[in-house]
Image 1 (cartoon, rainbow, N blue to C red):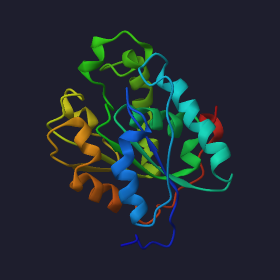
Image 2 (image 1 turned 90 degrees about the vertical axis):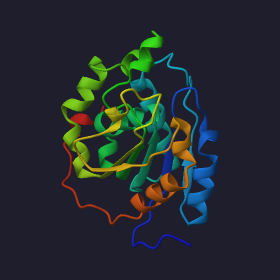
Image 3 (image 1 turned 180 degrees about the vertical axis):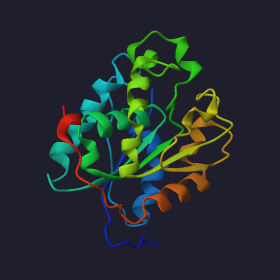
Image 4 (image 1 turned 45 degrees about the vertical axis):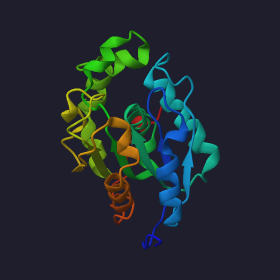
Length: 212
């Protein structure tokens, strides 16, 4: 059944570390069956060799030519992809284009698993990293969007699992047993679909100081 809503935006899915767009195969098909226009891209390199701010620029560079200048969109980020997406929204002007924003099992407050690597992108995902402290310093800006954080308490990649919680927006717990299952669990798919059907939240224009 198609999602019924007055305003349907294209949806962009952003993958996590060591993933490709293929990780969204089931979710992409599920959303398209419900009448949504779904887009994905491959972040390169995908292994943390570059900072998440650099990956966020790839998101911006994809959005600019793919969607019309006046076209709003909805953003779904999985794991690292949620943090990359946050940088795009909070630092690269995405706040003015994104209307619905969903993160799935993203380390908003870091994960101790990131200590296994000294790659720049991994260092940025460590608890109390300068990068995350900066993003979280004005996370309240996400309240201007329809923002949803989805996470599982059984996550072994996001440690502690409640690092995926945010003090702003809507929180939904999907008790999937494994990190990658958050993209294929029927409950996750239902939550994402419902979040993408939320009425658009009206917001005030945002200062261009975040448009770098």
